[in-house]
Length: 371
Image: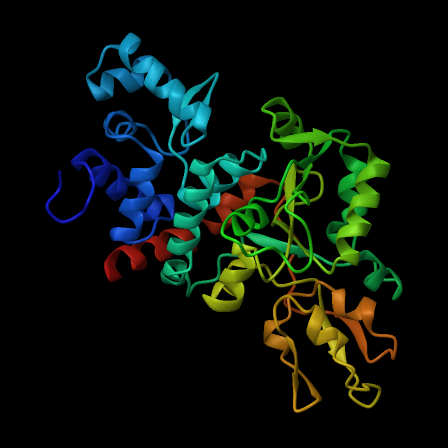
């Protein structure tokens, strides 16, 4: 046992691995150790310590690094991969960040057990500490918002790179995750979503959709079904967040709410707007037409619209350009206007990684130094 933490020494060492800024981890503390000890037995932790980050390595290489016999650690690796606490596939095994990464991979298939519920409790508690704030500061536009299509089409704007219809039309393989991991985890801790259900899972496109269906984490849908699902999600006043790449790239869209989504929690509470690319559009308010009904404030997931003493106020710096409020305003007081700071998304994830590398490296260094 470790003198400082109530866990086996191997679990403590693995917690130190997960605290790495390369894995976007939290600082080493009791909450992290408790989470890791729940996820990995001491025997599993002793093997997992030797796994590579992100890029999987075959059994033989993992065994060589761990100085173990391959046949003896194979069932341990298989057991961990079946629980989805590590990645395991044809190319081998690897560690994923706790979030984003393991969190989505583990919960999006809809698994529900006492072990999963305890995991959700520990994960939510750790994330609510706000440790992700330490990764803020520099602009790292890794994600972007896809606006409500009707809100911008009404103005005859040409925004092909931002429309969900472009993604649906381009890709032949479409899928929906069995559950939204964020809403599922909050449901597990007794905090059900005020806008949607756990079953309202992410929308997935291209090769991502094929692999999601193959591993049992989602189900295939047709183009028409995807359009209907998207419309339903917009009607639930959800925000569409996706990686900052073009519609032609394989991708996934999280349909987010401010009460459950950890991405929006980061944006709203932990200085996370630096992770969001400047939206193609932002909202413009004509206060002379506003009747202070408050519909926009109740719908806004980033709290850009607020009511104070029955008077409407709008904070443009909090707006991510989703357009949910515009679709609700019957008075015509809200409209979408082009954002001069907008830049087109990267063509794919490789180009996005190159664009983000300098700021990501500096942020990682800053985080490591401050810890």
